[in-house]
Image 1 (cartoon, rainbow, N blue to C red):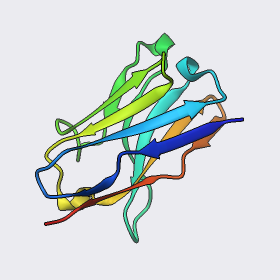
Image 2 (cartoon, rainbow, N blue to C red):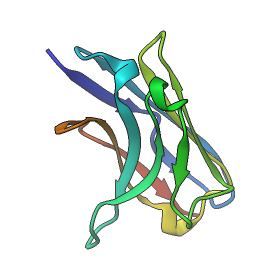
Image 3 (cartoon, rainbow, N blue to C red):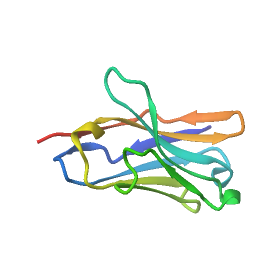
Image 4 (cartoon, rainbow, N blue to C red):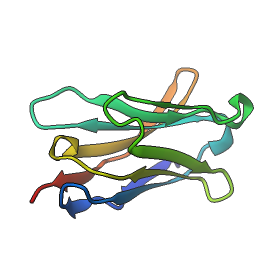
Length: 118
């Protein structure tokens, strides 16, 4: 049974930091591209960051809006993917989702809320 569970969201002031974690099970983690997406109210879901499969040397990719502030990483041993978010801005407020992708197979988590507000 595939499980993807995000955690680490919450309320933080502008300029603060959060670390999101995505725990997974039930699929060959190291073969999958892992990514974080977010969806703000009234907006479409967008890619935040991705990290390639082990075979692709774990190459990372970031949305322009978060590059230099966010860092994605994966731990194949614990089957987790992380998103370190620094210098958070009000516009980063959204539900953050973890996604696992291998060819045509896609798994999504249920999301974790991140609210940046003073």
